[in-house]
Length: 191
Image 1: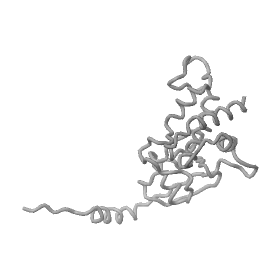
Image 2: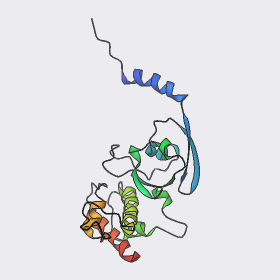
Image 3: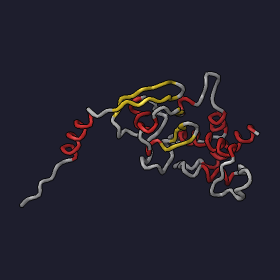
């Protein structure tokens, strides 16, 4: 008896058709604007931002949560949007790189990345900047990391501490020294 093989298109087309009538509504605030989408419940937050809201600053890198290119800020905490379904964020406040600057100018972290040449190709830069903003928030809140020496004291915010906290964001161009310099510059100006 001969095996019958189906192509991916033959398998996925009926599935896609059957899911079309199962779209769900999700509402959240993105960069200060209330947004409502009607989407397939399997849509990641990354795809909702990029494909449904045209916010392409959030990058699709590895699609496995390993590179940090898709980092956005959700309710004040950084997340890998490729690992999170959009429907999980009903009512959340989401900030992407497009929403970080204001009408008055660049966010201090964006300006520091430019000043310290904290990017080369620029692909990872949005995720790096958003992660860096949250790193400083984590330090200010006293959250320890794997390299925090004394868990009973506030983290010192050293270069080693910042490197550890940024380790989930990969830069294939190896601009790490400049990224760390930019973060420490902003940290220094906040104290």
